[in-house]
Image 1 (cartoon, rainbow, N blue to C red):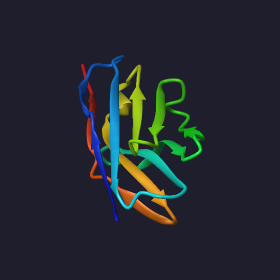
Image 2 (cartoon, rainbow, N blue to C red):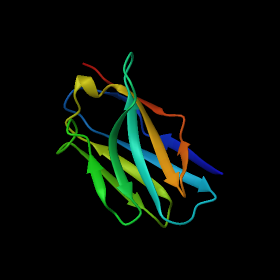
Image 3 (tube, rainbow, N blue to C red):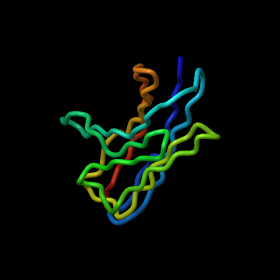
Image 4 (cartoon, rainbow, N blue to C red):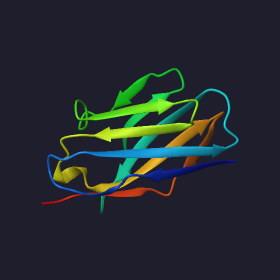
Length: 115
């Protein structure tokens, strides 16, 4: 089993920044991918950014140039630096890990962008 714990959410004004972190623990091994998803009220969960164990990253078009995903294999953490936040970035952000075909999710952290 793998446990994922997100942190770093909160309230921020438009144009501001936040940094989310996800710590993985438990049976950590092998090739994996980790990602951040988000779900806004009344909307489906969507991919924000992902990173493979080899460092390959992908981003949703809506966050390219504003968000940066990074990973620390030694610490089993993945972070999401979010800059130039917009009202539409408001959502619960979830961490996801896929390891040997098994999907793990964190419980999420709320990001609210509001003036």
